[in-house]
Image (cartoon, rainbow, N blue to C red; front, side, top):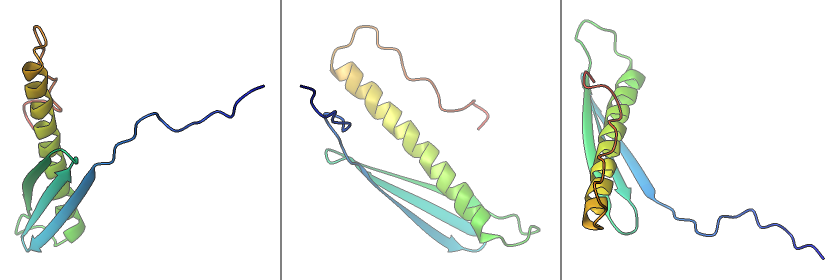
Length: 103
């Protein structure tokens, strides 16, 4: 007799991420709060419109949010590197950067 296949993973975690955007022309600020259940990480980033460019709020939102997400990625990689070191992993290699040094 065959059993039905359960497609659900054995362990599922849910992390909550809230992204807050605040616009005060010509600046847009993004704040991200990530709650993993065990820890809370928070990052902020900004975008500033050139005064000679037309006002397109969506662009500021995208830039600020993207920068805050990249910063959050950096924080997560640093946290993982610290956890790896604390676990006593021999010769732990640091995580690769998310982008080139120019960004």
